[in-house]
Length: 356
Ligand code: DC
Image (cartoon, rainbow, N blue to C red; front, side):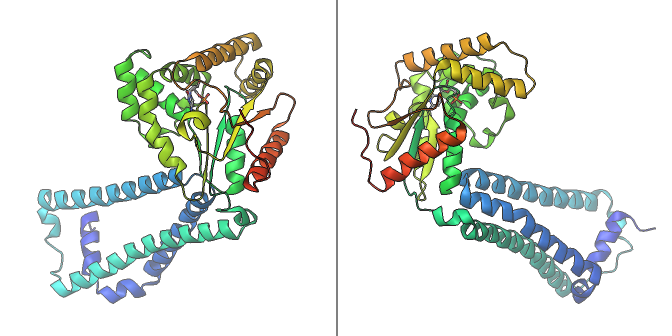
């Protein structure tokens, strides 16, 4: 009975061409190549039509995980070699040229996987360009700034606009939510200015998809740290870098049109009455199975409005040249259509920005 290690060692002792011609090995290579193409294609698509930064982050994470696995296997094999040298005793000595040839075959196999991933990525991008949405790809080329109070629907609107024009979208509220989360996780108080600034400076964008950032309490905590000028200053570069995407970008938040991208050619200030916003938020929470009183949701929204509009730095306020979109009596589809009309008219130069 061969040990696992002997089996692996014997595999290296096979004549190299056998590796290429054995049907099972060929099938495994082809399967792995196909799988790499299939797995990478959605990332290519997403990179082309949505949040390119997020796609790159996921790609990087996958690559690091692969390197991790390869290194761990190498360490385990080397350790085994020293701990159980007797395991090698029965293994036939292999000439150096054969090991080299074998290494080339393995390198080709790994290269094939990487090539498969690259091919899949490119296919995904191509698919995105050839799809119906492709005609809009890169047509925007400008920043769209969307601001508005909590639960005004600006996030949903921003995402739909970004998808429509195939440009990346940044929900800047997530940055403040992540800072508040990191402060609390470090065991500090939200009003601890130094801790909050430290967390803002060392913010890791890879953690923006953390489900803990989605809840109402995260939003409430975010509005507390968002009052700290040092926190806002620390988050500015990241937001402006994002806005520099050559295809254009959509950013939503509170101060995009006034502070982050004051030169954005299209600014939309989305609003709705506090009661309507509370009604929408309450409906969402009920759908998620959370049992909260409407009055509490309304209270929460009014408290956040007061904090966001009343703070000294970058308060929530429409930019002078922002189009105001009151969605109180609109469905999300109607709001989306109205926003598209505003954008298209601005892009065509038909509508000058409203004079403040
Ligand atoms: O959009 P949101 O609910 O995720 O935002 C959470 C809090 O973050 C909000 O109450 C105020 C703050 N915020 C901000 O001050 N500036 C931004 N550009 C975005 C959010």
